[in-house]
Length: 163
Image (cartoon, rainbow, N blue to C red; front, side, top):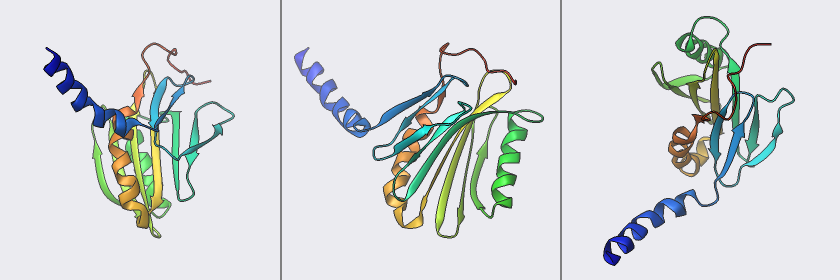
């Protein structure tokens, strides 16, 4: 039994070491949460309470909730991709399902990775990580943890409604 316990602890050590230094952000207005990588400094929640930006000297992680304007979640995903293209981002990767969407693009030596999830009612949560191509090996490993951690909070907030 002791051998099994030691084996389990040894196997879990890399997971806790990987999570070391990560912080957590929860948004009460829209009812979502995400882990924030080490080194990202919160810039303060927005005045309307929809989210927050976190920055390093070379990267920005924007996390926010919004309402779906027209149609459903997948229509909103297409609209977000269209906005990115209009802003000059060349989309290099995109996947979309009714439960999540991700897309990535490049522009002027920068990379942007966006993840969206539907929330209850007519809302969604999104994060966008933008960083220099020179930092690809530094920030790419964080994306999996960011994706895995972006989730609706369970019962911590009522479904948001449009004002």
